[in-house]
Image 1 (spheres, helix red, strand yellow):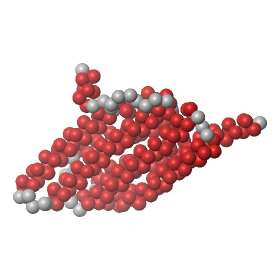
Image 2: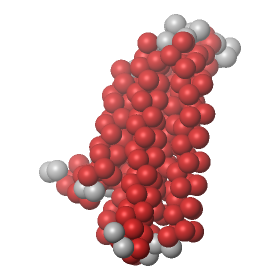
Image 3: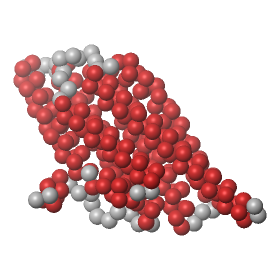
Image 4: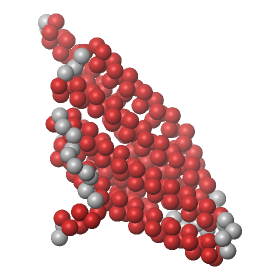
Length: 242
């Protein structure tokens, strides 16, 4: 192997190492989110505490991805597609770190909701959680396989998340109103619990947003351009299906 071949091989190894870090981070965040959804629905205090403790591992992965990317840029001075790829991993890690934060926040609120068994968790919470979890899984799979079409399919599903979240939050607000009337507006624990559910629903909606952000980054890595236009909304998606 001559010096040029050795340099190319070393660069390929650097890129492979960076991909491995992103994929491991994605797997951890997906596991954290799945556990947070299950812990919420079951009001599982021990599981919630494990999620909170493990968030430090997500933060450490974020640092590793950023450090790895900066090292590659400094030592290899990549251009064109390679530079897009390395730059994109930093943005992906940033979105994954935020998803990890949302999982941790959900777990913290689960600890409170576990003390309020009278607050019913709507079934749509599970639906919303499953939807964004599937989006996250699919977008990381599209990163692994370099599948731009699969990334775009995730991007196109943002409307679905928004629609479920809108329906869920509307129901929670209605339940809050009924609780206030029933309790005479005295700031009952039920109303507090509904407020936590409202924040959790918003967190899950934001997970969907970050997942579509990742999809946009993957498209940028593969094509060199960002996805044009605004993300499809529920109303537009409905008309497109008519």
